[in-house]
Image 1 (cartoon, rainbow, N blue to C red):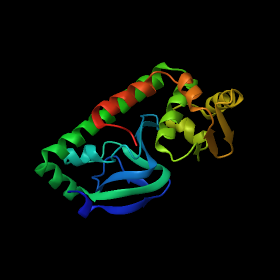
Image 2 (image 1 turned 60 degrees about the horizontal axis):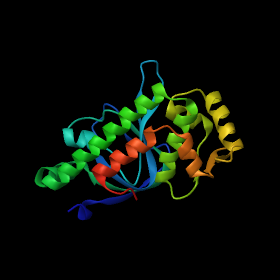
Image 3 (image 1 turned 90 degrees about the horizontal axis):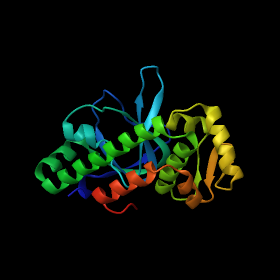
Image 4 (image 1 turned 90 degrees about the vertical axis):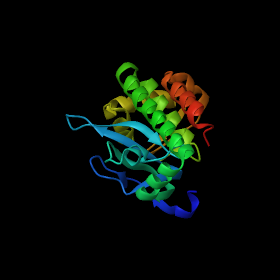
Length: 215
């Protein structure tokens, strides 16, 4: 159903694949890499509400609603995706109840990601929030090393860079991560899970219930 209409595209780091207020031209099915879904706050700060990858679809909200993108979607980790033209997506969704229901369930997962991120960022300490984010990024990566600066991490979870620096040093001293300039290596994911709050497990369980096993 989808395969004849899909085009393989490179997802380049920092490229914008969805822009708030703009009608999308494609829906993306990532195979590798990650896309950060972000909202801008009134004071100009940008914060991530979901990290999408090979277990997700980018752009379904606007596609299903025949509308514009409600959030920005920016490639965080480079990779490859299949792109589907928005008109073809809508035609398939209109003709296939099964496909449309699957995409609606995906939007429910997205809502769970956003709600849990909001709860986490307003209720939990920086260490737990960072651990939650690193676990999600690790799930979507092909290895333990994440090409990421502390400044980018701070933006993802909405804290100051010095707060990330302090927590990253503590996690490194505990042997949980290894940090060098521009990259973070997940050394002990089990210890990272213990450090994380319950938000990571809650969202993952909800995702599994609605969408099936994560690749």
